Image (cartoon, rainbow, N blue to C red; front, side):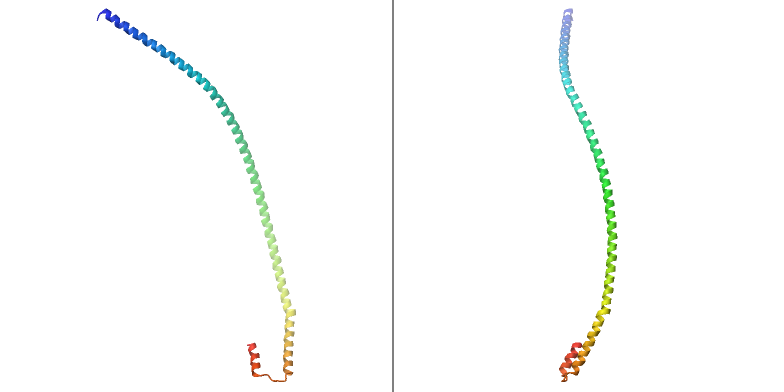
Length: 168
């Protein structure tokens, strides 16, 4: 190769290298501009994200307070309900006990009343109804004797049979 050709090849290589360096410089400027635009967008987004994070933190704190208040109130309500249930249980137990006592008393009174009624009935049977029956029996006997004595005719067989059939 001649020196002129070598110089042309070297000059061509230098030109290609220069063009490559210019192209890299242009690409570097493009990367710089896109990085700058990305930084601005990130800065704007970061501000919005920071405000969003702050509002979320405030909401979280408020929610925690509300949950804490609700939990406290729920605990108080459960304690109150438990106390009321204990009171109701005591009242119902007392009422059941009193009702049992009253039922026992009523049963004793009923037993006593029934016993007295039976005694009274027995006394009536002995004292009044038995003598009345005896008097009724004596009167029936006297009536039968008187009717037999004052009867002028004798009984027919039919009448006697009829009277006997009534007693059978």
